Length: 432
Ligand SMILES: [Zn+2]
Image (tube, rainbow, N blue to C red; front, side, top):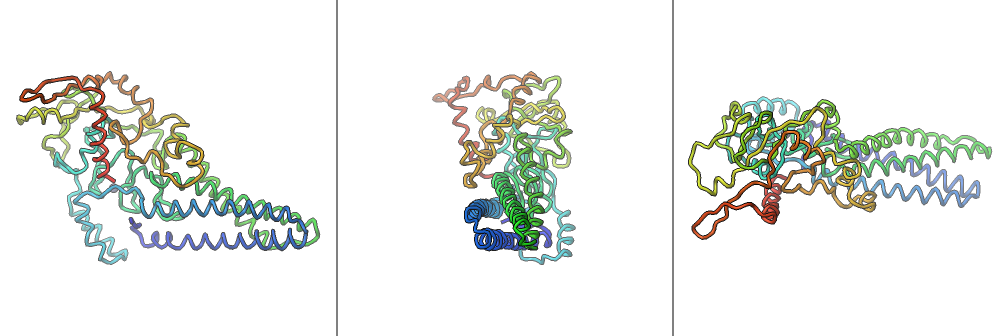
């Protein structure tokens, strides 16, 4: 379980469910007891109206509660936090036993500055292989993946650092104390299902209270203050849940998270796209070859961009084969490499059929750890980028297969490329 850094946030996430339960309890009392049973059934003798409201109310209350429980549990159990790097782990260990006062945090922050938060200079840096074993990954101008200096880890594609949790989170969307923590890759689907059912639930409360109120006035029974209170509470929550649902549906359809969206118009992504081994730099792109030779920790080697890294140490033929070369390219401002089109974007998060869309059981398909091409499925921009930069095709990559004592160079068959997927998935599994 990953807890919020600030005590006030931790308490808010614990208290809010009880506050919500209080409002839902009050709404249930007004709709079920006062409106349906006391007013429509007993006073007005309108059993049809009473039963209709009771059924619709119960169904959407149930769906809202189930999806709330699901998003809450997912956020506690699988928040999608990226494992900390060794330096950050060592730094944070004593904290668990330590005090949790704000003063203690300030002291920790000062201590934190003392440890080495620079990008890991080890070519075998933990987690690095998970990037270059795929054909495409997000990088910086120098061809290295993005580094989080707080978590001391390489940031997976599309992950962002959450300052509330002090952790990097996969496809981080936003921190939401209403549902108990960070909404991201693992919980976004359940979050939107919850806001959707909650919006319908509060709409039912509003309709029941408004209809009860007008019937009550028309029948001469006067104005019931409880009906008005339920109407006001319903309107308040409807505003939030309806807006949240609308916003979330929009983000799904354009395949952006809340965090992505803030910079979506001006963002430029640097991507490492695999090219045949030993491909020289182009006139508009640099190349980088992995596994890296020794890196300079203080400043990323200028060799990395614009030039091929040359291997100064003699290596075996097999070591040579393990090398993978990537072109470092950048997108135009505002381009989204993961935009698959609205329907496929929707399916990548909500699932492939209507049962998945409506019920909070199966996780999002996009959280499956990706494939040998990339961590998240790439949209039509990917082939366009390869064409734009005139990158050579990776299917031309040659590989050497051992045949007795002899090493032969041979074009890689399709099947072998697929076999690699297993290895890559294992590497990814160690990430999450
Ligand atoms: Zn981080």
